[in-house]
Length: 79
Image (cartoon, rainbow, N blue to C red; front, side, top):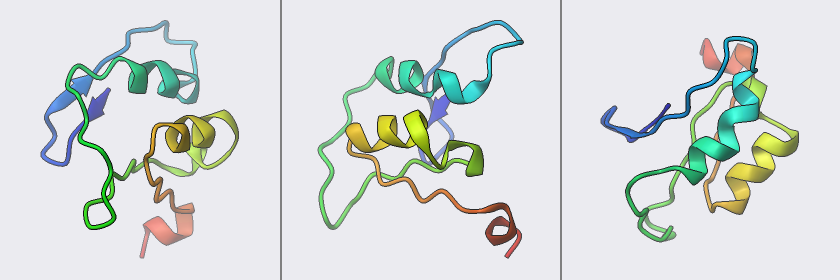
């Protein structure tokens, strides 16, 4: 599920319990039901996720859609 800053659902993908959620990031981002405003330097669009999304296809999917992914390491999350 993808939600906005207020927790309003924007996208939802259903899958089997044995599918890792990182594999569902790209289809979830592609199924957003509302048009996103274009990113602007004064109002960037962030994608907040845990460290499981930090590299590889998940990071590429976020960057390709103009999200700035502030993904933190687990020890940084505790601070």
